[in-house]
Image (cartoon, rainbow, N blue to C red; front, side, top):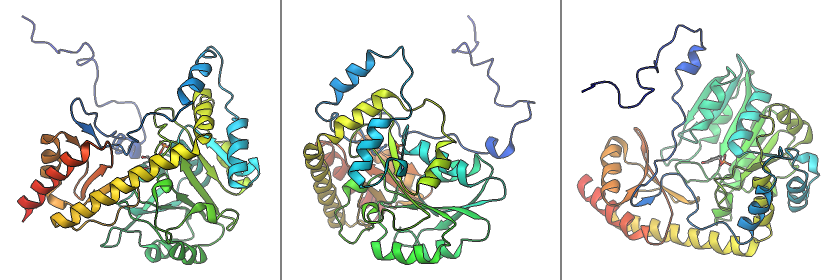
Length: 369
Ligand SMILES: Cc1ncc(COP(=O)(O)O)c(C=O)c1O
């Protein structure tokens, strides 16, 4: 009997090569997706537990009949719709295949070798990755002890070489927000020729009136781009569509760095159909925010010291017990996301997942005690 590899490619694939490749790319960990859940609840990717909004599947179905054609990547309809919605000109709107694509485009447009990108850490794991790809330098600024951005330290980290500063509110994975007042003070300190991106992927879930809100900042700063996505509240993660609002000249530069034709017609029509259903959207968002607040209260009652969550997810600062915590969640049918060595992030998902989540969290905190 053969003792060879089970997979035909196993012996042919070598992890090393003599081909000259960029060392900083080889040193990068590959982007890790939230684990799938063969059984149990997948609360590892901050997805929306609801089905697509009414009208979305029909719109996508129609677009499917044109699959033999390239998409209209200029996206005139969704761009016009968003421009109207935000009270700006179409040139002040940029749409792409997810806000991750936009993060990459803006970084490519602004930062190269020798330039610096400042971001809070821990934050969205794409920020270090998008910085390294064009050869720029990472400047991570530690979060405050209460898991928030340290905006004073971030402003102080801006140098002559800084080309981009990322502000993430609510912050993935800690779910904390920057306040409008903090953001205004921060923008006063950052030179107006340094691009600032306010990544608001989870903005729709925010209920705190003091939190920063990109909608109130439109056209206020010549160096600010606001990023939003249809992946989270709108539940279109699988179709890949996000957008930015900002100064036309900055957006024009980012448009030149796009991966051509990556934004599909399906994503565009689904986004328009979703915008047509704002009432249902708000109802769903309210539902998740209410569930989130109830989960947070229950966790506090269990004895957890967890920052108040503002996105559709909760942060457990489990530190060196992160792997053990992940395992307890898994044993209870909950797939969580671990951020070693800091903590665990859990998405607020299906109603039925809450009881299991709280049962597991009670076990974890009891063990820690
Ligand atoms: C903070 C933040 N920004 C952007 C994104 C990317 O979203 P999209 O699906 O639009 O690429 C995510 C997704 O997890 C996120 O957490």
